[in-house]
Length: 130
Image 1 (cartoon, rainbow, N blue to C red):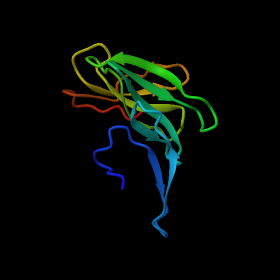
Image 2: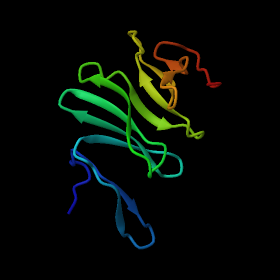
Image 3: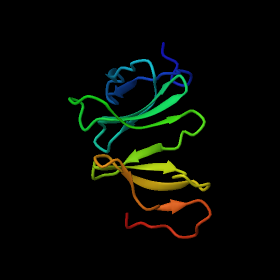
Image 4: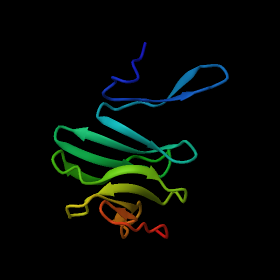
């Protein structure tokens, strides 16, 4: 039986609430520590750990190969994915963006660029227009 809370390299399972049956949607290649699904439930993002290197992985659809959007070392881990935006072209990420203050940004998946901050720790304003 799978222990959901202690699996160091999780797989993605789909649960049929009517039957209780689960099916594997995404097998872990061995180094993924976090998966991200879009609002339609499609697994399109992942965080992989290879020794001391974190990789933010992305694919436009299940039929396309994974590509690396960002790489950082274990000490920095400077781009943390939060969730996909509804538009499917961006994701929300937490990052210091080279500074000392953690903030929430949108990350353009095609251009591989960050927006202006939506929110930053210590600020009293929130930019919801991003």
